[in-house]
Length: 385
Image (cartoon, rainbow, N blue to C red; front, top):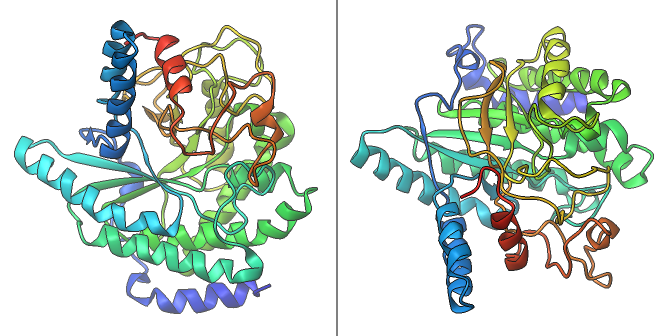
């Protein structure tokens, strides 16, 4: 395992151009969503158009008409493997063209999600890199490649959610040997990503902080704030001008936002409880909250109902109108209709949660289009389409 101090010293030397004592600009004081039109992912839109055609062919024209409206909702684009990186600059150029033709500033939303030993406590979304096979250096190359892609189109805002679930795994799952081994690499990787990507003038980063039902409990919330502060401090050791805007929560989950009475499953409560602890830890207390699949809040939640939840529906649309000023935006990070994980127990990436009583089955691999699930989300959408 690499020595952390040596790694940070080496990386700091690589970031000499960004190492002036005076910050480049106080970007962390600006909500990057404000005044922006969010870019619509053409891949997700195309998947929905295919789903609409399937519904129309089956004679379900009423649901098809509702489903067609989902294609206009902006979602995050997941950069979940090295091969996805080259899609970034084409999307940015497309957004730039829209920006030029409409006169309205665009923002492209990305999820950076490829840490070595990713999804260490589950497996449904296990990644391509392992620590024993040069995973850390490969991850750094992946981050540098993302930097290069974004650098090509500097006049379009990019908003990044960084490494979903990694903080949750560090805080709560160190009893799992795979997570215990991965945790130091997670920390180094996240700090390196912050130091690298925040050097770009058009990038705003939100580190993922899991969700209320995972890290919102009294024993977890304090360590979460402390860890986030540590990660930012370590990024600043690499690049003194490193910065983040805040945290993302409820990514790919189903929690409410001020409308969930069940303790532990409301993201507004989580954000309001976490905010002062973040401030004390020297970390910006700004939030974006995924509500893409949070339309239904009238069923009993459990900690293991995260995979293709059979009660879920599309939720509130992306907006900067939020219930608290600490929340920059309601967003759709998870593109609803792309699966959470396979229900095939013989599959390499099978997780028992995906075959549970709370899951819609049969289900495909994570990220693969799941037509029946998409139809469920449209049917249960609140507000409706």
